[in-house]
Amino acid sequence: MRIDILTLFPEIALAPLSESIIQRARAAGLVEIFAHNIRDWSTDKHKRTDDTLCGGGQGMLMMPGPIFAAIEELRTPDSKVVLMTPQGKVFKQAIAKELSKEKHLILLCGHYEGVDHRVIEQLVDLELSIGDYVLTNGAIAAAVVTDAIVRLLPGALGDERSHQEESFSDPNLLEAPAYTRPIDFRGLKVPDVLISGHHAKIEAWKKEQALERTKRNRPDLLG
Ligand code: ADE
Image (tube, rainbow, N blue to C red; front, side):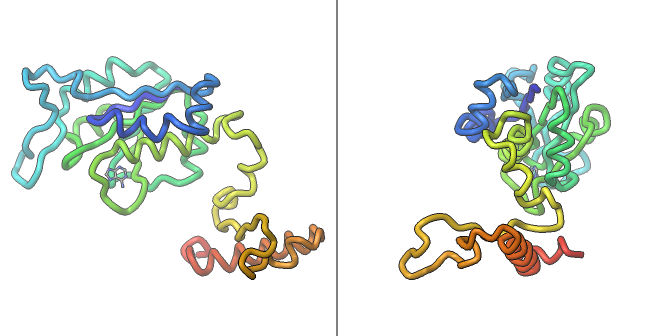
C-alpha cells in the first residue's frame, strides 16, 4: 500500500508515523508513506496556496491550482483521494478497515477555512472528519487516519489476535478493564476472577464489565 499526504505541514503529518509500529511497518515494506508540501505545486512567485473567500467572509481558503496540480501528478487509476475536513463523514474503525484494502490513498489536508469546492467536486472520493471538533490543520487528522489504517495491514502488529478482541471489533461494545502484575498494588487488588484460571467465568466477567463500561462512557453505542 502507498499513502501520499498532501499538506502545508509535512513534518506534522510524518512525525507520529515515524516511530514504533508504523515505522516498523514502513521498514518492513508493508506501506510506503510520503508527505508532500502543497506549496511545491504553487506557481505563484510568493508560493501562495490560499486566497480570500468569494462572496465575502472571514479567513482564507486553499486555492484549487496547486491542489489540482499535486493530485494530477500523484494519482494513478488505483488512487482514492480523501479530504480531511471537519465537514466530512466521521471516521470509524469500519472505514479504517475498508481503506486498508486500497492500493493507494492520497490524503489531502485542509487548512484555513478549507479548500475550494471545485477540488471536492472534481478530485475527492471521500471527505473524512476524525471527530466533532476543529483542528488547526488536517495534517494531524491525516496522521490519525494513516495510523489506524496501517496497523490493520497484515503483519503490522506482531500478534494478529490483538485485533480481534479490541474495542470496535464489536462496534457496539468497548473493551473490558484490563490488569497486569502486581496482583496487589498498594492494597489495590486485581479482581479475583481474573486469577481464578476459570476461563468461562473470566469471559462472563469481561462481557459484563464491557457492557458496564459502554453504558457509562458510550451509551450511544448501545442504541
Ligand atoms: N481538519 C480540521 N479539523 C478536522 C477534523 N476534525 N477532522 C479532519 N480534518 C480536520
